[in-house]
Length: 206
Image (cartoon, rainbow, N blue to C red; front, side, top):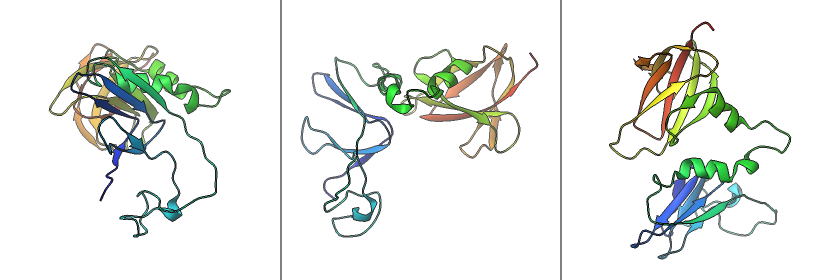
């Protein structure tokens, strides 16, 4: 299948042999393709009725073939980076910061900032992206995003400024408990090994 489009959650990053880079913040899940050296294409808008695999099989989530008459818009940001990889440039956090005004309405609450203020990580490359009451079991479920690489293990302290954390458990995406996490005072010590980490927190009395 040519061109091949690869899934991208929030940003894509290219670098040349001299380590200069191009970061594209996509404003949401998209697909990207590198059809030629130094060039990048990405799927900005969808038209599900016209999406085709190999140009003729009617399968959703493939490039659209044909013409559409509707209008659409999308938000994005581009950054030309000096030498260094995407982790060194903290693209996960910078991307959310660059597109923050497009994520929430002008008169709405900044939920990203609220989540990051309610719970704190001592690494800027680990970001709190969601807090909610647990759907399975008790406590609250927290989701962390990170740029951790393959076979890497990062450690971060997860703390709450307003309430002490009494216990923490590592969960899977379906909120099933996997293993208890060690505590450092009122903070949970979380080992991050993947892009999304799910933790169950139980708070103590104030």
